[in-house]
Length: 314
Image (cartoon, rainbow, N blue to C red; front, side):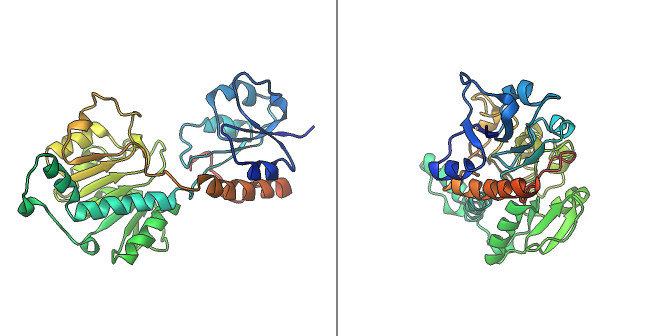
């Protein structure tokens, strides 16, 4: 009997056929009988699997997360039972870069203000601000695959992007890089701060009242990383006090964002419903990662791409 790869979603037949050369491929359904002792790999994760797969008798060896973020997964239990974890990092890099470029150009050309004036039937060209993108100091917090893709695109438009990562190590594509401990100092001069960090204990509410107090009144803040990295109450107060000019959030502490949340009513805040990572041809990009990992796993019990350090959470 072949070992099982258990998935949370369907994949096209062309990929299933490749997987089934070595494994039985199953898409999880609650009413389905599963021999949990044969499950060696999962694609995705569901909380209800914990009682079956996170025990002393488990034969689970590897979880391939579909998303880039893994903060909601039971990392400590994976570590306890020697289960490897890899994520989908890199799949969304181009889509998120496109999303951020759209925001940057719309902000720098005053398109957001024009949309608001259109709703009010106002013709006030002298009140709409405009700047040149290449004149902006853009701080990218998170220099992984998405950050690097964004930096590369911004460089094409004449921007010299600055990056922040854990240690401040150099990364190709960034004019300068600083350590996360330098975040507040860097925020003082940045025209736009873009968060692309994973969620860890260190990055939870990283962007708080003290952080927003450091920003220039003309600056903006974008979050396409993880919602809980931002203290949204502090951000709302900072926007209302004009401590910063504009913010755009694609991720939130609570999703969906409740209808009565005060964030909806803030004029200088753009809300998008967690769409920055929406990616055409997702299966093709995801399977390029998974199948490369599967080949390496079969050959050496190792993973080639995107393995997560379970202690660090990224």
